[in-house]
Amino acid sequence: MKKWQLGLVVVGLLVVVYGMNLVSGIQRDRAQAEAKKAEKARRDAMAQAQAGQPTSGPGAHQGDLGKQAFDLPASLGPKGAPVHLEVFVNGTNACHLVNVTFIERFQRVYGKLLRVDWFDMKDPKVAERADRLKIGCEAGITINGQIEMKIDRLGGPRIIGFRGPTGSGDWAKEDLYAAVNLALRQKGLQPSETARKLSNQPARARGM
Image (cartoon, rainbow, N blue to C red):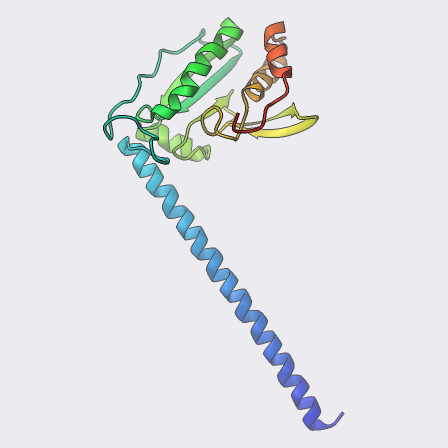
């Protein structure tokens, strides 16, 4: 190969390397920009939750901004019950009332085996803990302190995160029955026949 041909090859290689570095830099900058945008959205949402303002789309809050849309009920079930649910909701967001009404019915299935405590996201301390659980400004439920549980669903084991209100698309009602039943078995207890039947119903599509 002649020297001038070798020079062209070297120049070509340098151009390719430069192009790859340029594309990589653009992708890195774009990823950083997206990350900053997501973090800003998260912080803005947290600020809204702490201020008691609506945190999702149109109609998410029914009533005056910052006004309590519904009152959180008293704790359900005995202290020291083998399974403990922590239910996070935003009391100024009427859409979260669906979790309250469902959980009230849900607890009656388990009776003394299940304790339910309610936490309002507009409380800054509650919002801070919810942030650590990656609930953000939405509703969520922990089962014995866990926001995610591995349960049998749709023909095999799946990790389900109980984030968002009932019917939000992240979990189905049957998933929560299955998770609480599992938590009882982990304590050496057996769920009732009713609870087992409710967990064995085929999970409907997320967003039920």
